[in-house]
Image 1 (cartoon, rainbow, N blue to C red):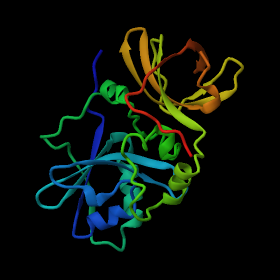
Image 2: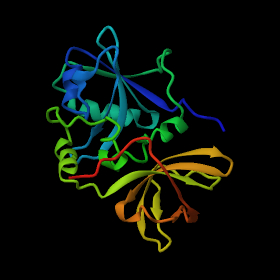
Image 3: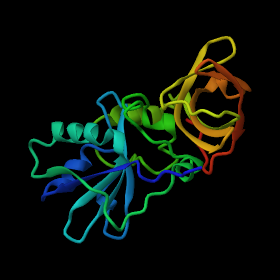
Length: 240
């Protein structure tokens, strides 16, 4: 299997207001970003749906670099520029920096980290793909776009779908966003990410209804699979 590491896109923000601008737009606390410490975050719509995920880093000249999935780079830039008109910040796409080696798709999946792609942008709220357990969300920072929805899901325990790690015997990969059904053809969730392990084995991060987590047999793209639920490398705290 060829493990892909080339599916990353890079966005650079320069200008004195770049950090302040992002602080009002993203789920993480931009004040914690330093040259030595990168951070993970997401930008959401006003309805709390994830537009894209990113890893942010800072260079010695104060430029902020956002690494995201390359299929949403243009979407991310458009979303950022929509809110940046009153800030002194320049937002541009840049080539991959020579000193950055992204983790492989399989490593990312086994770390319980889904990508947001062009197929899944505006599909999930952050808690659905476990961003609260992965450190993408600060619940102590001030307001940001979509913050009210994200906070309500956290404090009221209103998340009825969560992401799970599945192993399936399959030779084909379902596309991100593909709907998942039970054997009675009832929709129970969506594929968040999927990676080939070998010729007849794939691993999937699937966002499933709470009522479906005990289901063994599932249907994807018209095919029925026996799902082996694997442990995630982090704990999801139950809601209040």
